[in-house]
Length: 347
Image (cartoon, rainbow, N blue to C red; front, side, top):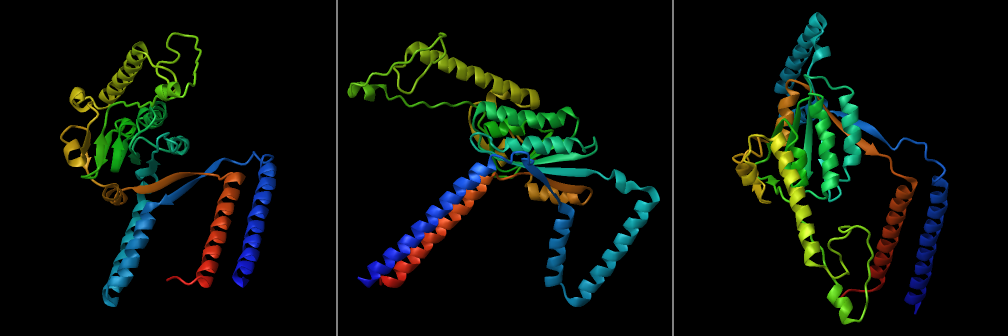
């Protein structure tokens, strides 16, 4: 009985806390609507040469004996002095090649394009013809119009005659490959997935189920092909033919797009919807070199300044409150479980 009383009091406190959080969230949400003038995000730039250098130095400190570490430091100082003298003599550092690294991790809607467009705009405002833009791409594809926009963002780079390299460590298929093929050079890990140059659409139909339960479904359209296939209505052969015709047309556009950017590939051989791993994709002309993004970027740091550029979206007040509420609720649940674990012995 004492356990039930304690548990009831604890549960009441927990519910009160959750209700309080929800009320505060509602108030903050209403207030948040008044503050819309803040920037929607900001650029986060990391100098990768320094990052890699720091990791290398940390390993040296852990692994090298003291005499070798001392010698290495002396050599490093000499190299830095020589570099400084050279830069003062001819000011060559001002024109040193730069590599800008962007990331794109795509979902079905290519949501990351909202950040990609900002990153491309920022980098193009500074990039020169001798610089390079590297995009680490990961996507299994998704909606045609969404990935069409993402591809167009990358096409802005090539139109400015800035070298564009796409690195595929895991997957760039379907819409993902639509983006990748825009590049001047495509690198892929040996077992990365590429290809899937095809179009697919799946639509369930519940018309027979509705008829079975004597449920009528009516749809009115103006325009012969405003709706070809529907979820609840009765589909016709004419509608199916038009739907397939639209799919074939989209596929033709996809093939033309790939052929335009990769003129050396045999498009009819690769536009079958099949996928290939990196080792096979290179023989099909879908990839130029086999390499991971890490390997490529480490090489770049040896001769260029490498900058990782990320556009970080500013979280709205509602999102911040949602994260806080989720964290609070999770904490309450954990406390309840902990309380029960202390009271109830497990057999």
